[in-house]
Image 1 (cartoon, rainbow, N blue to C red):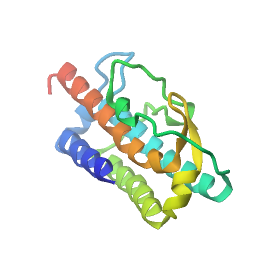
Image 2 (image 1 turned 60 degrees about the vertical axis):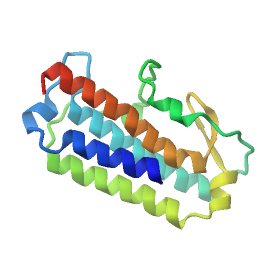
Image 3 (image 1 turned 60 degrees about the horizontal axis):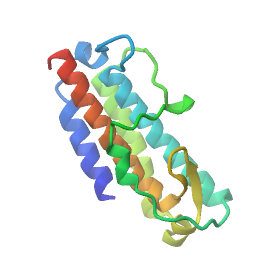
Image 4 (image 1 turned 45 degrees about the vertical axis):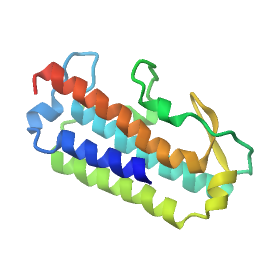
Length: 162
C-alpha cells in the first residue's frame, strides 16, 4: 500500500492551501482544473474499490501476468478517462474534495486489508491499456494513477502561475 500512501501525501501537499478560486480555475478551455483532476482521482479510486469488491464476489479465477503499472505515471501516453470518471464543471471547496478523497482512500485501504490475498492474486479485471490485471495489481495501480495526475496538477499550477 506504500505507493497509495505516498501518492496521497503528495496530492495533499500539492492542493492544501490553494484558494477555492485557483482550485476551480481551468488553465484553458480544453484542460481540467485542479478540482476536476482531484474529482477524477476520487471517482477512479472509488470505482476501483467497487470493481475489486464486485470481482472478489462474482469474478472468475483468471491467469494474468504482472503488468508494468508504474508506466501509468508517464504523461506522454494519453489515455481518455472512462465516462464514469469524467469530472463535472461544478464548483467545489477544498474541504469537500478532501472529504471525498478520504472516503474513497479509506474504502480502498480497508478492502485491501480485509481481502483474502490469494483471491486478489487469482481474480482479475481488464484494464483499458494493460488488459487483464489481477485485483492485487489494481490496488497499487490506484496510487500510480494518482501520481500521474499529481504531475498534471503541477502542470496546471505552473500554467496558472501558482
